[in-house]
Each structure stands twice: as C-alpha cells, then as structure tokens.
Length: 166
Image (cartoon, rainbow, N blue to C red; front, side, top):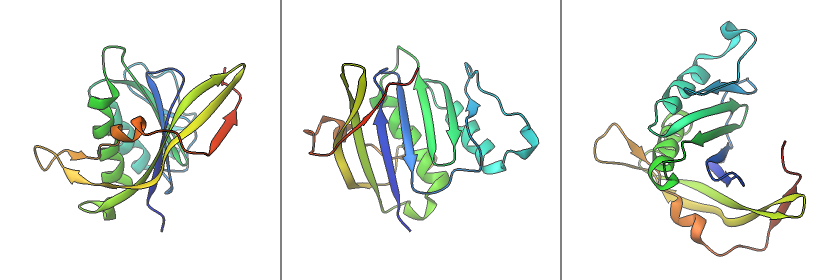
C-alpha cells in the first residue's frame, strides 16, 4: 500500500490540506475545533476513527478549526501561530492514527504552495514523494513528522491549476 501524504498550503496562510493515500473515514466535511461551523446530519453514523482523529486534531495547540473527508484533512490555525510549530504535531498525529505501520520508519510526503494567477489558483509542487522520517519527539507521546523544510525547496515542473474556492 502507498504511504503518502500531500500537504497543500492554501492562499490563506492559516489554512492547509493534508491529502492521504488511506481512507480517513466514510464522511464528508466532519468539522472539529473550537471555531468549527461544520456539522454532520447524523452524528451516530460517523465512524469512531473519524471522531478520534477530530478530537486529536482539535486539541493541537494553535488549531482553531478543521474538517475531515474521505481522503483529506483540512486545518486552520490561529493568526498568532506558525506552521513550523503546529504542522509537525498534525503530521505526527495523522501518521499515528492513519499510518501506524510507518512509525519508526519513513513516509512519503509531497508539498505544494499557492500561486495566484488572475482568477486561478495554481498549486506549485515543491516536493514529490520525498521520504520523511517518522520519529518521536521529546516524549514517546508526541510523534513528530517535520516537513516544513520541503516548503522551501524550489518548484518542480509539475503545476496544477484550479479555480479559487469561494
């Protein structure tokens, strides 16, 4: 099975999406966080693994809201926080809950940054399937997967385009 996470920085610098190669749960737009404005019509139908992921992500310092869909985790952080501090914890929790077989090994990570061209949002690839170490941080509780250095790489030739979301 492919162990891959693609992190996309949105034009809004406080928002990122984490696209994964494994199913997060059979849900669309399950919201979490203290400022979440998303809801699910029938909470009883939401799988426990989705609730667990939402609970863990909502508890990460700096996360104000987010949502979970079939293969995507979207997160927004507060204006006073930096991705360099928050993202390693988000990635660590994501690996721990979705890719536990990668703990102590590596996981493939791709990253893309935004570029606005007229009314289009271009996603500029910075890294494509780069192996990243999955290690524990200061304690055995926090799994750390740091991908921030990948956002500083020069762009690669692949550029994907999409209309900006409303």
